[in-house]
Amino acid sequence: MPASLMMVLATFLFASMGVCVKLASGQYDAGEIVMYRGLVGTLVMAGLAWQQGISLRTQVPAMHFWRSLSGVIALSLWFYSIGKLPLATAMTLNYMSSVWMALFLIGGAVMLGSARIDGRLVAAVLLGFAGVALVLRPTIDQQQAWHGIAGLLSGMLSAMAYLQVTALGRAGEPEVRIVFYFSLGGALAGCISTLALKLGGQGDWHGHDPQGLTLLLAVGLLATTAQWLMTRAYGRGKTLVNASLQYLGIVFSALYGVLLFKDALGASALLGIALIIAAGLAATLLRTRSTPIDSQHSVSES
Image 1: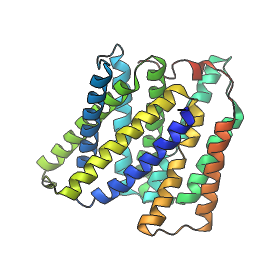
Image 2: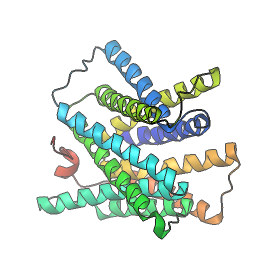
Image 3: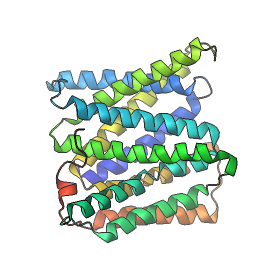
Image 4: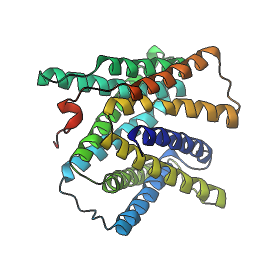
């Protein structure tokens, strides 16, 4: 399966996961959902590794550590910003990860001197972000500045995590192993944050019923499959192409909102969706020049 198609499928599954998270959030805290999502992913990836005869032992533990750390912190900051900012604002700030990624790659190319990046592909990423802004129409007050900074940092750390996924793929790490360690990190982080809240008197553990268990299982399976596809896409495809296609997650989420939650889409949202699709198609069709940034490790092991 081509990397671009894997990325499109991953964004659809992530959007589907978002629907399940929205439904599950009425019964569980965010930390609990993160914990169960990571737990399901860890078990699934461990079972898949055993079935395929892939060892979970790694020669690059530092790379997995930094990838998991940046990803978990980005997720935590994103949840924090969602709790303090309008959802549209928090989503837009997090989706700046692709813009940060483009800036990282351009900065690396400048430092390397001889490296080049197709400016048209960078423009496609920026066009996609413009579409995101039109769909979400973010707003922010002066009193929310610190929360906005948290959202910006979540996007920046997400970009670092995605680049580290690329680096792990270039290092020859199997996708199953990469997703396993990320899922394990998410399960541990969710467990620690949930325990901290419960011990601090912020609530009790929630019980389970068939509907809740089904939603938690769906979140874990959808997230794990999407993460696995995204890891394969970033490991085998062009980084900025994947970054542009990632914007399709907003399109799928918007459609889910209309069909399931009766959300209204205005003219600006429809224009934004068109820009997002155009950016994804343009990035897929464009051929980037071969550079050390895309053909070698995007991030060092340290």
